[in-house]
Amino acid sequence: GESVGLHLPTLSVQEGDNSIINCAYSNSASDYFIWYKQESGKGPQFIIDIRSNMDKRQGQRVTVLLNKTVKHLSLQIAATQPGDSAVYFCAETSSGTYKYIFGTGTRLKVLA
Amino acid sequence: DAGVIQSPRHEVTEMGQEVTLRCKPISGHDYLFWYRQTMMRGLELLIYFNNNVPIDDSGMPEDRFSAKMPNASFSTLKIQPSEPRDSAVYFCASSFTGETQYFGPGTRLLVL
Image 1 (cartoon, one colour):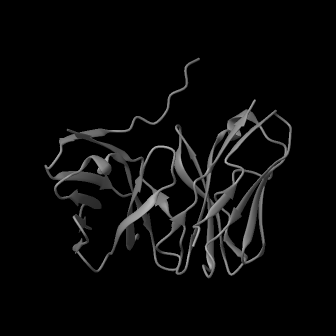
Image 2 (spheres, rainbow over the protein chains, first blue to last red):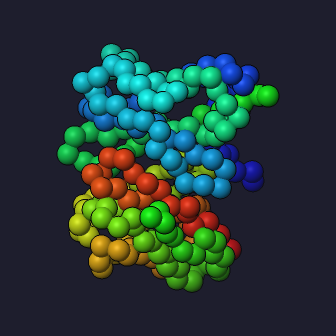
């Protein structure tokens, strides 16, 4: 029979617009979070991280927001470019371990 | 630095055969991770090492899987005997602190 795979949610944005990618994490004890970008045929690439004692962290064109109350993480990409097209994953872990749990991912498509 | 190196990049084998995947981490990195990525289950941590010692292997599917790190510059993931459900992309990643991880290009395994 036909196999059922993960259905990746897709976010399509116009070039130059801002993108917001969301992630609901699973473990309330998690205190360290990472966003990764994975381009087709390549391994995941670290984008930005945040610890649970912070609500917001900014990098170059990217911002991560953490809401521990509802166990929600978001990645904001400013002025989205064609090179941002990829699958984006969040990952979580808790202190004392590096046993990361990855989210299912969101596909970002940048429209010219 | 060449980054994390994995070999082979592609492997096609028949059910029952032994498969060995290889990884060379970035020099100076004390942590090494093995991940598996499938459409069905996404990205899963199999095992990770710190200073060549396995720290958490709870993600290893079953006894058919084994991983070793005989020295700081080399690790193997072995599947014996291989089964069709082992078909996936296997990633190796290394890290200096366990946090920011650098992924290799992956080994695409197909078991017929």
